[in-house]
Structure formats: C-alpha cells, structure tokens
Image 1 (cartoon, one colour):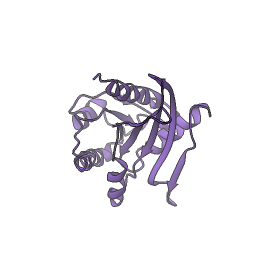
Image 2 (cartoon, helix red, strand yellow; image 1 turned 180 degrees about the vertical axis):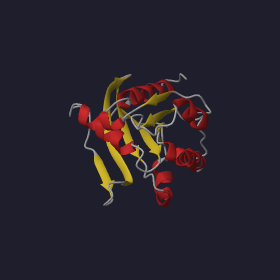
Image 3 (cartoon, rainbow, N blue to C red; image 1 turned 45 degrees about the vertical axis):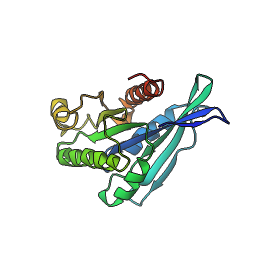
Image 4 (cartoon, rainbow, N blue to C red; image 1 turned 90 degrees about the horizontal axis):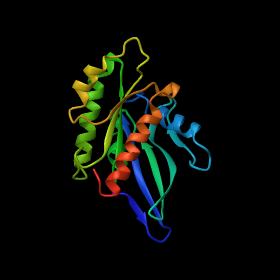
Length: 195
C-alpha cells in the first residue's frame, strides 16, 4: 500500500525491479535517472560489489506531480539478482506497490528467469501477497542479442497471467520508459480504486 503522509501531503509508491543477476534491473534505473530532469528525480544510490552487481538496492525517488492535492512520488528499487541475497530481496519487497520483472532474453537464462519469478512469488507470500494483489509488468530485456529467445517462448514461460509485457534493450534505453509508464499507470489506477 502506498505510503501516505498527511502532514506533508505526500503519497509515495514503492516500485521494485526484480529479476536475475545481470539481467538489466540496475541499467533500467540508470537510464531513467539519466533521462529525467533533476527537478523530477532524486539521487540514484547504488550499492555494488567489485563485479558491478547491485548488492542491496538502487533507490531513486521520482516526482510525479500532484494527485488530488497530494504530491506523488515513486521510490524505485532493484533487488540483488544473486540467490545468496534472498533475504535482501524479500526485505525490499515489503510494502511494494508495483513490480517490473526484468527477464533476460538470452536463451541460456531461460531457467534462471523462471526460478527468479518463482522466487519472487515465494517472497511475496512472506507478506501474504500474490501477483494478483500487486500491479506488475514484464520486461523482456536484451532483445538485441543474437541468442535472444522468441518472445512467444518467453510469454509461455513467464507470462501465465497475461500482464503487460515489453521488449527492451535497456543499455540503449529502448523499452525502458514504456515499461515505466505502464507500471506507473497501473499503480496509480490501483491507488484511485480502479483496476
């Protein structure tokens, strides 16, 4: 549920980018951050290892303007993709309002994508949530690879709920904002009582 601060008249939505290690979650946030004006975005905080993988999260508040007199913001996070950081993944999902599941299109990552999606669903259970309870979208990243799976295969393996799905090449910014626009719209509709 979005965090509402009546004192400051702010409503903050929590958006989490979830997926396998090195799948493009952090790249999405870096592209979004680089393309937005400083007036609408906060500082991008990244905690990384020597291998450039996100250890805990990236956090970037995004100012959406006003909704019913409340200043609306999105706090954007990524989870670490590596399995050994599952406790961090679970913690970052607490109070989530929307999820972008970033799937790696490389055919060699098919099983990892499916395991990561199952892991996300399992971690949501910790908060008595299912994917029916939260707006979420899929992003099929790295579509430029010669080893990229067919979208039809990725849909069959990952999109059992027929949520919006977007093809992307996050390194080039392709599909990044279409994905963000879709999940933002879904979160705002949910907050307003729509579906």
